[in-house]
Amino acid sequence: MYTHSQLRSDVGVQELRRTAGLWLKELREKRGLSQRQLAKLVGAEYYTFISQLETGRGRIPPDRYREWAGALQVEPAEFVRTLMKYYDPVTHGILFSDASSEASAKSVSSEPGGK
Image (cartoon, rainbow, N blue to C red; front, side, top):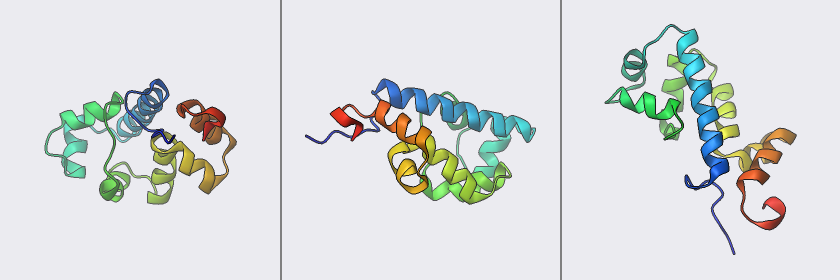
């Protein structure tokens, strides 16, 4: 039986999202940006979206990755690679052969064998 390993209700997914949010918040603060300023830079209609992301209650839409990378002054490929570690650890582990990502992916998966 196939189960989606990135369901928000999964505790492992929640923890990964919170960690991603902390990373995003750290980047924002390093740039000296408020949530409102970042929202404007990335084209978010409401600054509360930034708050939601920083607390792990959402994801940046993939079609907005470049805007976010630019606003946070991070090279786009590095930005996506880091986000993928949190948003899609299975794919990250396959693409980058990162043992820590593979371990995270196994903890997120609810199937035997971590697949």
